Image (cartoon, rainbow, N blue to C red):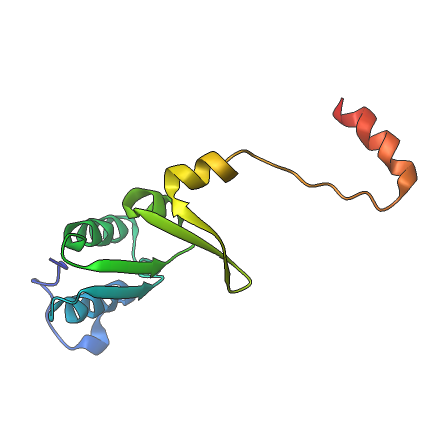
Length: 126
């Protein structure tokens, strides 16, 4: 499942991606009900990332997977529910479609510190 069937040699000679695969293989040996991963695709090349995400999709019927990542395309690809953190606390959570519907519009917050610049700013954006 993890693509290590052709790996030979000592673990010390493995690439970071191979070590990542070994770690997930070890974690899955016991068929856990819960798997927690912290940035699991960070050391993987694009193909390795795809294979790893495919693996997580495969095991999701038997195992609940919680993983943290900054790669939002990975989240969109495999997650059912999402929680976004801000300063260590959950800022919002829900399904991806719920989050996009509620927070998906592009927003810009502008704070004008000099009152005289407000008129100039308003003229520029109109």
